[in-house]
Image (tube, rainbow, N blue to C red; front, side):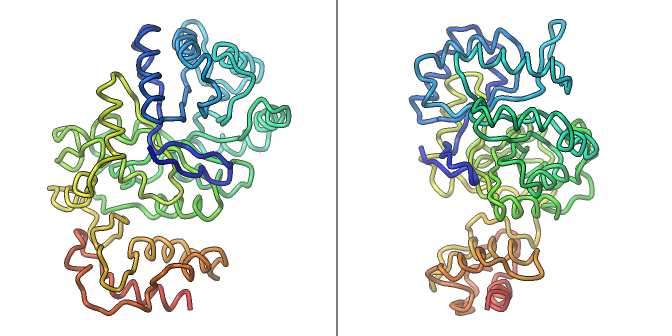
Length: 380
């Protein structure tokens, strides 16, 4: 298992994480089996947004005695009322629900205290300027949560969070299908078939979000990496082709700022399908060829940092140069940190010989040679 820095939190998280939602379907023994198997595979980050007392109890028992090896994402505002989940901003109810999480997990702290499910811009401002964020701050001051995060499906809200200076990391939905979609305050929009019409690659607001998070040191953990399973089924996929778990994970992990993909595990086999990413070949990770050959929604002309352009005879890491170029070009003046990263590369855009091999290999028709010239002009 490989580990990545989660923004500026100082935490190192496994590339594959455990999203515990599916564990609600299982009894205590089955939950323990899956969680212990995840630990054996090197997974060290666990998200529990669910408020159901039974699954919280089962997860808590499974990690008892090994709490310190887990980085836990726990949610502020996910509550259990009248036998069902309710998102609440009532501090009394939310506070009791969060204490319930601590009690059932047999812990005195949560590593990542997530302000839960903020998809509306107006709600974001109300929370950040009001007593709810102040509550999260008070928990951090007491050491009850170590870092303040936020979960959202809306790239506009995520961008506000990343630029706020108050949110340290974001739980965000990342996959090649959602990345084509305009922002919405209604999560259900992302699962409507007609919402995918007239799309043409990664929407600028999502691409900018990833770059802003990277620049600001705001780490991303990923939910819905398989688009709720739709991408694994050719009939359900908006592309008309199926991707594998490894391909979906690779797509998410090639986005700037992404540290871990949290996948739902319903069985040991599901764990194996995800952690297979760690030993997968480049051919097995290759989502680009599949998307480029799909009957619909290819990413024509856009660099997705897939790496098909390699190897470069001049030794240029073309995908990295493109990432840094995209990050820097959002600004009137190139950020010093991005320029320093570019200058530290062993080969840069100026080293491009113009051979064109990269362009012949690119599945999406990116004009790589022009991009290398553009990058050199920008950074010099």
